[in-house]
Amino acid sequence: GYILQRAVRGEQYIYSFSPDTMIELHQQLLRILEEIHSSSFARDSYLAVLIEQLLLDMNRDAYQSTHVSQMQREADLLERLLEYVDAHLDEDLSLDQIADDLYVSKYYAAHIVRQQLGLSLHQYILQKRLHQCALELAQGKPVTKVYQTHGFHDYSSFFRAFKKKYALSPKEYQDVYQKDPARMVPEKEQ
Image 1 (tube, rainbow, N blue to C red):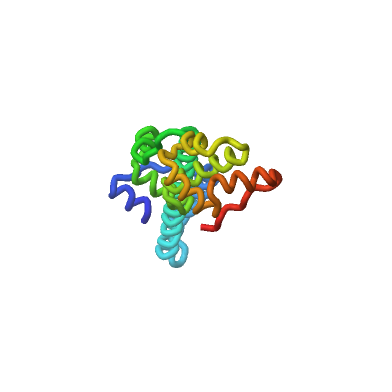
Image 2 (cartoon, helix red, strand yellow; image 1 turned 90 degrees about the vertical axis):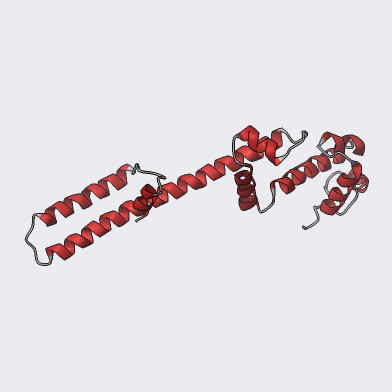
């Protein structure tokens, strides 16, 4: 079963069960003990079924608790990654730096972001930076100040990325927004 396989691999030897599960397991053990001391017809067969049910329930609960906690760890890591990116958006953000600062493997961090968001970490950072730039352009801030403030090192890479996302150049975007402040230009479908 699952518990034995994990123990053989040296992954986990001790499991905690919820109070409700403990009550159910206790009741199953009592039924097994009653059957051991009975002289009922087909006692050995019924005893095998009861023991198999006990082991199945224990393995199922262990599996669920392990996988729920794994999903929670991944969700927590994703939240930490996204908060880190938001807090350092105006700095150089490399996968190596983020992983070092959060004490995680860069491969695991990249995997979690891609799995949960469907984008690479680099794509996510680019999207966040472009969104911040769009907001500031809409406020009338100068294009040169906006792209430099948000981690773009040269105008040409900023221009290409912005135009790809918004289907307008940064200046065109700013002009459209300045003429009609009640609406933002919709983002281009990717």
